[in-house]
Length: 101
View 1 (tube, rainbow, N blue to C red):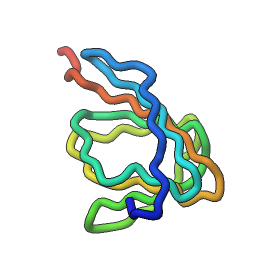
View 2 (spheres, helix red, strand yellow):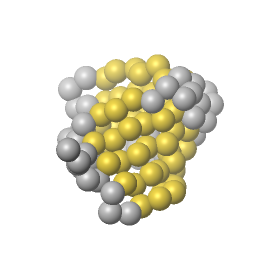
View 3 (cartoon, helix red, strand yellow):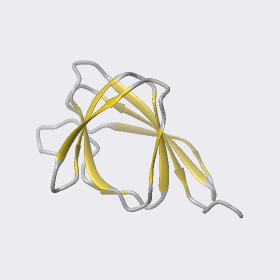
C-alpha cells in the first residue's frame, strides 16, 4: 500500500480457536497492504469485479464473481487492491485448525 492509498476495512465477524471470519470492504483503489496468510483460507466474494494481486514478483488481475468462492493455502504473501470504480466486498474464512481424519 502506498502513502496515498486508502486501506481496505476489515471487520472480524467471528474469531475462535478454529476459524476467523472477516468481512473486507475496499473503496475504489483501496488495498490490504502487504501481508502473509498464516492459515489456509477461503474467500467468498460478495460483489463481482476485479482485484489486483501483487506478490512481489508478478501482478495478476483476478476476476471475481459474487458467491463464487475460492481456496488458498497457508503462506500466500501479497497485496490486494480494488481496481474497480465501485466498492468491492468479500468475506474471508481462515481455517485455524487442520481437518480431522
